[in-house]
Length: 213
Image (cartoon, rainbow, N blue to C red; front, top):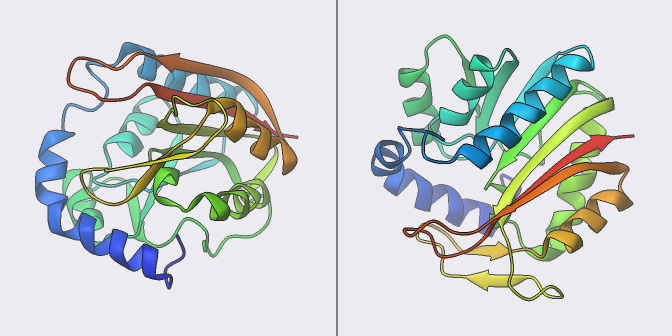
């Protein structure tokens, strides 16, 4: 979703409209999701083991994951399309840096980042746009940098599936398909996690931990 595309504009407006309620719903962070916390913790450990450095939380929303990354000993900043979300994040976490922007148009040089987290943000990109997003993530990461993708997993192992996300149109991905696309732009898979949906969730959750080689 570039900052100028019609899809991005619609997504930005949708999240602006629900930002306050969304922030309230996600205030507890990953407290109820121990497997998700474990994957984020593994990401943080690998970034630190590789020497540390700046980490971008792309599609940061109200900043909860950005704050978790700081708590895990990283140097994170958050970026989101929604100005209202960014205002909330700045108010909730005044010690962290948050910027309005698009995750495919960051004003950063090649290899500027030690890590990238895309926590249920890539889901709003059209399937044919995703390879370009992954290529941009690869450009932004230094060799040996790490990428954490969290997404809704598709039941059909062969097809990307659209679904009625409560805020904006979104897609579910077969984990093997997404991993293969990442491999085409220079990422090596470090690990993956699939978990069953909780009673209040509809779909399986996928997590890919990747290294930029």
